[in-house]
Image (cartoon, rainbow, N blue to C red; front, side, top):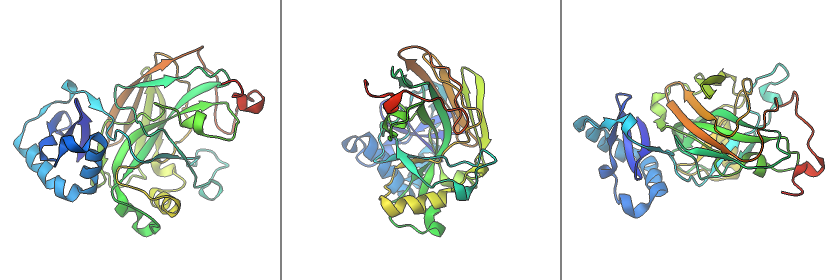
Amino acid sequence: MKILRFNEDRIGVLKNDNTVVDVSGAISSLKAKGPQRVVEDVIEHYRKYRKRFENVVAEQSGVPLASVKLLAPIPRPSKCMAAFVNYVDRPDRSPDTLPNEYFYKAPELVGPEGTIELPDIPPVVVFQPEAELAFVIGKTAKNVPEKKAMDYVFGYVPFFDVSARGLTRRTQFIPKGMDTFGPCGPWITTKDEIPDPHNIVVKSWVNGQARQNYNTKFMAHKIPEQIAWLSKFVQLNPGDVFATGTYHEGLGPLNDGDVLEIEIEGMGRARFFTKGKGARKDTEWMPGKNQPVPPPGGGLSRV
């Protein structure tokens, strides 16, 4: 099932790939809970809601997908994190040489047709969008063994980890954690529709020009290993979003006015817009290859 948010915080299910059926009426206390809690409720009690949703979808014809305004499928998860260097995308990389490590993203996620804002930070040499598969947690998880980890996955969502390159200060707050640096969508695809999340194709485009095109089989630390590691240190909650990293080949700059798109096999396609301040930043930058040297102090002394 593909579950989405649209228009005025309505919950919908995609029908026949091009129609949206409003299932909001099947959700208890929709208005009283607020947008995020409603999504968490659907995820946490999906066994109850699935049959209700299926009945509504069978009875109603819905409206054309093109006629609705899609919103971020999860408006503000309690945690949004992304994996750090998690792909075997160079000959010198292997799973045993890459860290199972993460950083936080701003939880206010940007939905389809939303705008990514690029601030004017002169030491930043380039902004880059990293197309990634993200998984959504389905139930509370703490100290989960790897062999049971997939039981805690509710579904998946296409996700961009927007990154500001060039700073060396010991933080991921500015490079990764700024507002609007987590665009995602178009919807949550439930786990049962994706037989193997470690063998699907991820693609991205900027202004219609192809950028990334890779298979998740190159992921170093697979999703069960990620959940087992993460749940040792933090409690994972229904609706939490975790991006699994990216294959760096194909990365390029993102600037004011650019149109950014992502598509993951079996999960749909989403488009985002870009608003930037300051001069264009078009430096060629590839992790581990040609990282420019920024000013002393990481370049943030006057920011």
